[in-house]
Length: 581
Image 1 (cartoon, rainbow, N blue to C red):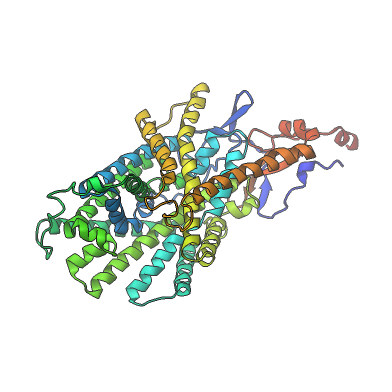
Image 2 (spheres, rainbow, N blue to C red):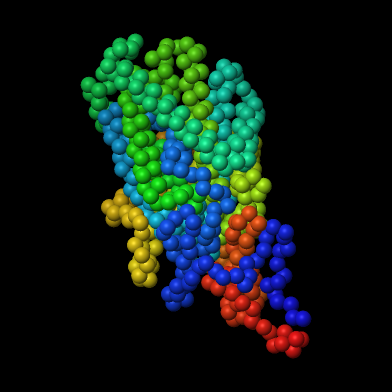
């Protein structure tokens, strides 16, 4: 009996190749390009996508535990980390004056909302695909085939660590205890913190999302209490002698600001708002996702903006501009000292609040990254698709969580504090900025293709002015890091050339492109085969692609037997099969 080459596949009790079953997807052809149409039970909208993309999971194996409040708190937890307690002083130092600092915070909102509008439109196109940027880049740039999924997968796996929040949490834990610590004691507490977080998110999707909601409301309450306290200070009802000291001449110091300082302040500000798209990574876990997100996402951003501005008012009412600039304490520390005095209780209260913010941010980022890693695993460009895709045994993406834990532990224990640690953290940022820039152009490409195919209009469509603002924001973020520090080429947060991480980041993406060329083009051409995608279905309902090597001689038959996304439609018998029968 003739043995077909594609029958030599991974044998696994939990995985099967989908064969001889009616496909829910129908194909639309545009020249050599194929688009498939699929529906998820979470949305009444249909998903039209390039056939090379990961298949739509009709029924989410992670469940549907993301409500309006959950999506709201997913965004809030990632936006409100530890930055709001310290960043206001850095922004004030960069722009020079209290008045300009307040305007910057509002500009940050406008720029953030423009990018948010893009995500809402992209989610409208793919309402049954989680993973946000993974999906949007995959669909915006389907050619060369597998290039963007490969590059983004490598980048996201390598830089999936969350060491910064774990280390900050550990520092403030020691602050609560009022004890000093060694470098290895700090590392030990940071690893223990991230391990606890792994257990929390790895054991239950439902309860990890509930914890996100609890932390979200605690963070809102925290900033609200600081805001109210600030208004009380402004009203002259506290021990602060002159709460109006910064508001009589709010523009004092503006002329002293440097171009580098203003640029650095804007970059810090934009990253202070980052996280307002966090809920887009769980789109396929939301019932009526576009309707839910078009209310929860803007509301989370507006709410955080109002709280940010009120907290800044509180800080600037409690202490003078000079005190904030010259103090070694973070802005929140100065505020608490002014209101409650220098007691240990006030200091510990602040440490507790920062710890809560850091841990809530850590959990929200882990959930976001796990969905993005899972989606890269479903694209077929990573080995061991079951590891990335399966939700066994706890109904959670345990494989992606373990990868995040492993890379984070390596980052905590490996690089020494100082240059090496700062360099790796900076290195992880710039490739993301490049992908964000490409995403803006990708939206326009998706619009153009859908219009050419006469596909339905999306449920949400962003204004061109929002796209323009988002484009300018990302161009700015690409260009700003190249501007040298005022203290010279070696005057950044590393002791060597400030742009090293930029060059290395671009080099890593270039290496991904070279790897792709050898893997997808050069080696297959030499060995005379091409890759074709195959659909795998796991016992928990998860679906993924795997890439199969098909010899040139068998390409026509493979294409005839399989549909656009890689499911087996029917068998085409060989002549030898007929002779055998």
